[in-house]
Image (cartoon, rainbow, N blue to C red):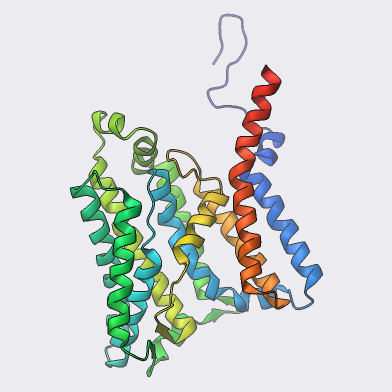
Length: 332
């Protein structure tokens, strides 16, 4: 568009290579490359084929990352998803062992997860004064408690008929089916959050819920949908996790909610709501997975791996604040 001065004013902000490289997602890509170089250096078995072989058990957590990003953008949190995975996996194994057709088994996994997410959503939307963390902490205890009762004194269940699960645990060449499903879901959720009216409404609610409500956005309906989708994705995660573990126990899904939150926050999604892009969460998810695989191949203590991931997460939260303070000092 030409102004009175004769200059052309761009309608879209100009993108430069420098801005692309130094945005949070650009730095995450650089970190992803560096971590893969580091892992290849410390482990001779860290090769593409070996990484893909170990990846399925970690990729199940990526299913939780996508809807968790929406919940965090809302300015809320869901810590019941690990328990939802446990309950869904338990019921999936039971349904399979009862001899149900595999199509029905898939339906059970998705239905149990969806119902759990719907319960969270109904409580939070009908009792809006309740904090999501406390509500989902309560449902976390309830869902895992139901799973433990169903599992009985043994505390575990193994698949007696795993044919269907072997099918979904299959590969195209050396690439597991779950990798393609994760990529499809990543594209779908990214487009919805970044390019649709629904996604813009999520950002508006996270920025200022009251203003969003008076702008005509159906705040509670959107919250209900997101929590229900969170449950559905937990059921999908349980289905693929069962295809890896061929069973379930009382610890299934332990820590999955924290891992999903860590991936999202490390990817630049703000826990205060209204900020962040899912692309960063996806890159950070694959970065964390590769780091875990690489450190696991040198038999590093799992607790030490968690400490390293925790330090990375703290740094991810601190860096923007440090950068903002330095900018303020420069302007002063």
